[in-house]
Image (tube, rainbow, N blue to C red; front, side):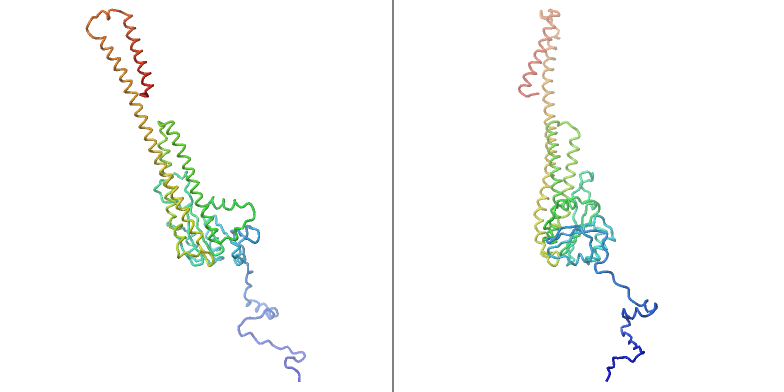
Amino acid sequence: MRARSENPPGVTRRRRPDPSGQTSARKSADVGPRSARTVAPAKPPADGPALSVRGHLYDAAAKDREIAVTPQVVSQLHDRRILWIDLPRRDKAEMERVADLLELDSRTVSYLSRPRAALSLDNFGAYLQFAVLMAPSPASGKSARTPPDQDGRVDFLVGSNWVVTAHSGDAPYLEAFRAQDKGDTDTGALSAGALTASLLDWHLGEYFAEVSRIESDIDDIDERILAQPSEERLLGEILAIRRQSSRLRRTLMAQRSIFYGLGRPDLGRAGPDDPSMVLATLSARFERAIDEAEHTRDLSVGSFELFTSRSTQQTNDLVKALTFFTVIIGTTAAVAGLFGMNFDPPFFKSGSAGFFAVTIGLLAVGAVAWIIGRRRHWI
């Protein structure tokens, strides 16, 4: 008996239609153009198109390198391979592509494109989001009462094996962090929290550098106060230093909730496998920065007190000199008045010789008084 699967010669067996309504690739190749229009479009490659931004891949098992960010790169991240994406401008389209790639919450893009006035630390479960403020520029010329400048804001997103930073314009400490690597490193062995802690440490380093600059300016002003206490512009420079130190402290204090919040127990993880104990240690360095900023403010106050003391001392020296010369002039006037009395003793009849003798005597008394005053530091 012949199997039923064999077809009689010259007879073509018809294929039963697929109940799902889809047509196989072989059938779509045999049918006409009308059936071809029903085929679903092909899906893009698994790795997808590269983003317009690039990231820096730290790989402990291979060479660190700058790389085009793709879904395949993200899927291959692990404990010894970490990705840092830096967005140098707040382009919403780029932020949305990064959000799709890293599966970020929709509110994250909103917070990045339109930064909120107050700094906050948000926990989205799989990642943390917060922002810090760069050290204010001394050339800003803004009052100490002006709120911290949002132009110097840098937003951080910290996931399990990736870190995203977003800012407007230059961020010198981020560039300095990248520039320090002169060869292949083991940065990939760090966690995302540890990498973030390193970046924040460089961030605080900017404040320490600004404190050093202010202290150097204060030392220069103090030397000039001691050398030239009557210089009028010194008071304006002291006021400018005082304004800079106050603004530096205010900008630091605005970030207090961020640095203290990173060590809270409820934020014990910056991602699925990323403990934030390293981030918690930044609070001690942040406290040090606050102390240094307050110290510069005290130094500026000390410079003002030195200026007033030197001005007072200069006034006292002037008063002493005037008093001394008043005594000399008064003595001379007393002698002149004595010789102007309406009596006619024989000495007054000495003529020109007596006049020159009295004049020379008064000059000699004045010279002797000047020498005595100088030796005793009266003038």
